[in-house]
Image (cartoon, rainbow, N blue to C red; front, side, top):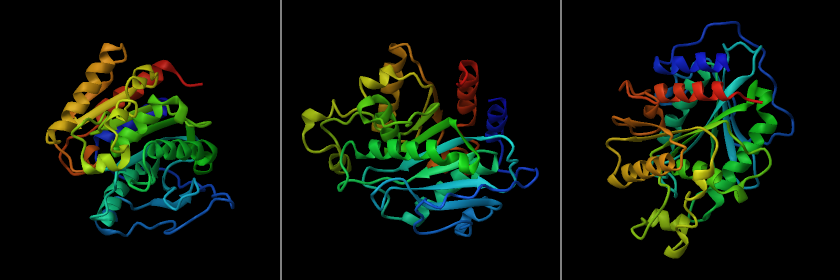
Length: 310
């Protein structure tokens, strides 16, 4: 865990390449299903430089749907003698996806994964089924299945399944929080050490958008039951909660309400207000704004260290 703490100190800096002996990268098992792109696809647009010396294993299937795939990013310069913590990214601006600019969306998420990998962690990005084809609670159950896959396979990439920090952004924040809040949705080995929730919606109301209705349905009477309340109040895992000053008013209110409710239940999260961001990469300060989740995430790691891991 001390190594984990040291790694997060680097989150406050730029994504400088780590120095060290190049390890022998564990081979992926033969029974993993690969779809689409494969290793070392690091030439896309502005991510090329940040992703130098980062290897991708893309399209690893964790479920039956074509959408049930994940990517793993590892640094080719990180020493392999100690299992590395895992940052698992579950992102999505809306519940219906980012069809307007899918390549740009992937590039932005790649930046976050490469930043994690170049700073000694294992980056995992989870793709999941989208509304309207996939309705509540399929987003959360997909995350659960992905976590089960990570627990069973991340050691092949020198990852430590005891140190998984799930980072949910946008709709992904709801899916991560919903999984924790609804034990009935959890599968075997779908646990995490901590969560970071960024700019999420945690309870929809009568003013739900069309995209939200596509996921939660049109029956307003079901919305409270399908929210993260009250189950989120029983979560033991440390939580970092963040939203941006330039988020829509409803997102800011969602974050503030969740913080207030958790604090009232005696499980006050570490919260931060980001000055501005346009996606998960800039939420971690990769846009040069100097605004990032580095400090609150570091405090989260202190908390994990104090609690200890089995």
